Amino acid sequence: MRRGTVAAGVAVLLLCTACAETGNQVSEAYEAGVGGGGVTHDEALSDDIRELSRRGGTAKLADLTDFAWEKVHVFSEGASARQVERAVGEPVLGDKFYYDAGNLLVFEYNGKVSKAGSVLPDLLVTDGRRSWGPGTVLKPQTRSRNTLLRLSEE
Image (cartoon, rainbow, N blue to C red; front, side, top):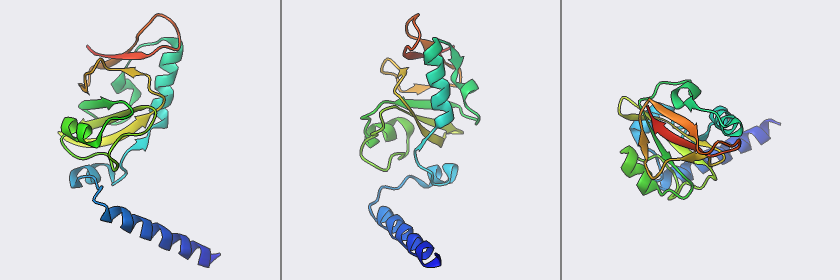
């Protein structure tokens, strides 16, 4: 049993070393802010957004999050790492493109990236706008249930 654990640890170490050598690392500021976690799937936020869509509800984005933030950048599947970095001001993605079939939300606090999370599925409508403030509200795009949610600022 111990031999298997050691082998698994060595495999993870080799994988991490290979990733570090590719140059696809996030900035020191981002790494310090999120502990090197990179983009994670935010299941709780995804659930809240799906529920809002299901019932055609409205909510402030800040009420759906449990951490401090001052700005959020919203991207859809296919956004390039370059587009994200230009909007955010520092590297976020480890790949050349954001591949998840959902939205990428990159939150800033004190001018630095504090969290980058994917929410599935892609239910957010931004009308081409990338950055939003703390007063961002998610509103149903139509009067029906199971609708897309349009971002707006109040």
